[in-house]
Length: 279
Ligand code: DGL
Image (cartoon, rainbow, N blue to C red; front, top):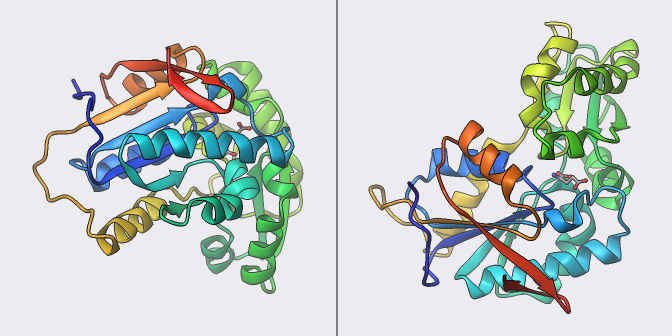
């Protein structure tokens, strides 16, 4: 069982998402740096972030960052494409002493391997409408057509654990059908919740379509940032990880056990006037 951290620990990686999605990034972080302390916040009281206005997401992201800083994090992974799209720049401005690792849909590696010249992206409305996505496409998709789809309802299904339900498969089929019809041979998962749908996604995709999700790249980038700041701990440390949820902790507990094989208790925290407090 993972030891909860009671004291702020140097080198603690702060990670947050609107819910359990960021745990797909945590899985990669643990694989790469099993001894590094970690503190995770699922803001599931406000999930999904996808349809919310940017200002609201910026306020949530700032409140969560203050909480993570208070628990010892000088490096924060915004393990949410939607929050990165809305809040990465404002966070860097508001907290210059903190290093942020953000997420953008992985257009660069997708453009490098597509043979058909068509890359599909599944993400939330917030991610696809943000200027960050537009900038990444402009910068990396030279000569490649990028077609995207906002998949409504999938985040909620992952939160409720219904990843293999017939309803989930039907939504996924509907999401990818127009992308496949236009020749997509590389599919980018632009939402951290979607890797948990992989087995179902593989049932609806033809075998030649490659799927890209960036959690390992994010873990490598986080390790680089920790090393630069001299915060990287050596091997052989006991795992000290702390998990907190602003809403019902059940979904998180289930994902931790099922996908991360992690038996850890999830603390309940709550919002009070823009700050996060222990319940
Ligand atoms: N996991 C998130 C993302 O990567 C959030 C999805 C949502 O809350 O809508 O975009």
